[in-house]
Structures are given as C-alpha cells and as structure tokens.
Image (tube, rainbow, N blue to C red; front, side, top):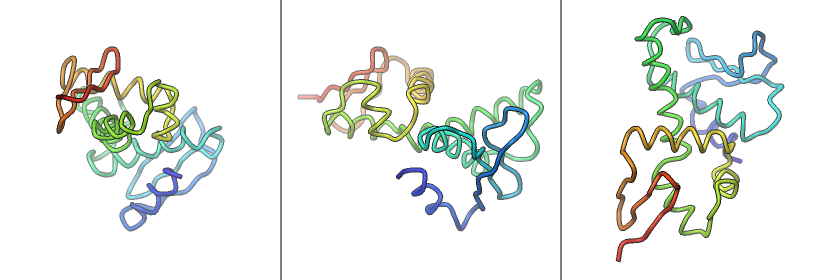
Length: 151
C-alpha cells in the first residue's frame, strides 16, 4: 500500500502516527512529527493527507496556521504542490495510461488516492503548465484528462 510505503520512505525524516484529531483537522505537522486523524475512512484519504503533511515538512517554515496571511497561504500551496507532484506526478499519469487506465476512478485506484485528490492535482497542473504538458514521447492534456503518445 502506498500509505505504508510513504511512511517507510520518510521514517528517518519524520515520526508519523495516527490518533484522533480535534477541530476537523485531518492531519497536522509540527517539529518533524506528523499526526494523521485515525478516524479517516480510507487508506487513500490517509495517503493524500500524509503527502500534504510531508509537503509541509519538506517545504514550509514556521507556524502557518493563520491562513489570513498571504505568505502562509503560499506555503500551504507549496506543501500541497509537493504532495501532488509526489502522488500524481505527470510521469505517473503517463504510466497509468500505458497500463490501460482510462477513467478518473481507475486513476484514483491505480495511484491509491481519492478522486477529489486527482481533481485537485489536475487543477494544479493546469495552472502550472496550461492546457497540456509534454513529457518524453507523450502529451498529457489536462482538460479533459487525456494522454497521447507522439508518433
């Protein structure tokens, strides 16, 4: 499972544990420690939350809880972007296509993330790259999501 692989991959960097969180929080990062809400229903959702919290570890500095400050919102965006690149990287989209994945539901299952996370990642890539991105011998269109092989 991808969730467990992420934990193993980063266990030397951060300590990760699950426990119930309050105030509607799904994850929390502070001082090289990540807490994932143990009440999350699916492993896919835990994977998405963990990737964002790891993004905070690798990209943000200081307390960014106050999202009324633009610099904190920018750091939040960086953490999410790190997660999107990690879990739904452009090459992952190409590999999914090569393996016969054709729908967003199948893609979410293939990448072990939620469909909402796929939607958010695609929106991020569209903002970053525009309507499409070329990688290796492929063109990835973001709306609608299509991968084409160049001839």
